[in-house]
Amino acid sequence: MNIVLLGSPGVGKGTYAKRISKIYNIPHISTGDMFREAIKNKTEIGLKAKGYMDKGELVPDDVTIKTVEERLKKDDCKNGFMLDGFPRTIAQAEALDKIIVIDKVLNFTASDEVIIDRLSGRRVCKSCGAIFHIRNIIPKTEGVCDNCGGELYQRDDDKPESVKKRLDVYREQTEPLIEYYKEKELLADIDANKPIEQVDEIIADVRKALEE
Ligand code: ADP
Ligand code: ZN
View 1: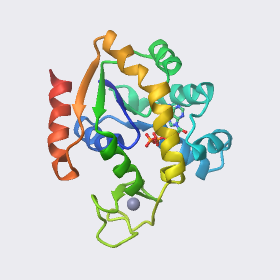
View 2 (view 1 turned 60 degrees about the horizontal axis):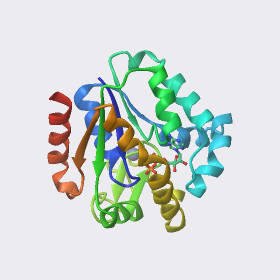
View 3 (view 1 turned 120 degrees about the horizontal axis):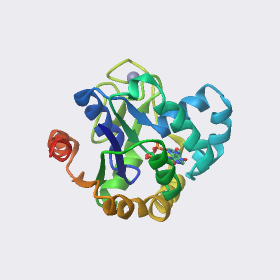
């Protein structure tokens, strides 16, 4: 199954994606993670992406589309995949439609209050990418990843100045995709307002949407 995840920054897409990817045994493809990896490795794409990301702006479509197109050619995508953070513009969605058929689009929704709380408290493992939260998903030892012992950090773009910019960019450039996929009858809304203790219920809603 070829799945696209939609939803505001901070809605929890990455957390749900990791779970869904295990359940359906399909790769979780996060363009944000791919760019962060490229920046860490100082690749050409990383150098191009860094300035935009730090400011909370979108990386240009041509770079992003090429990155995803290459990734989807890999063997592990043959039986399906889950795209997290792509497409983020209408141009990206149109490019994706030319590359492959999408079966379902999950649109995660939450209130502004919930979103800002999730973004401002998020901490990420430098080594394995696991996601924590200073109040809601508290690691056993402060600043240390439960999974691998790696160091937890706050993403530069989770700082207040960039958060506001990202939410504006989302409203202007990404939200129109909801209509785009609704018209294609691919969209399923998933209520993601529930606290993290109820993440199992969110995942159950996802399974229902994917299996109907
Ligand atoms: P979030 O969804 O929490 O904003 P991501 O990790 O998905 O975080 O993305 C972080 C940043 O990476 C974005 O703010 C943007 O700069 C860049 N990025 C990720 N995906 C795309 C995309 N599809 N198009 C353009 N830029 C992207
Ligand atoms: Zn870790």
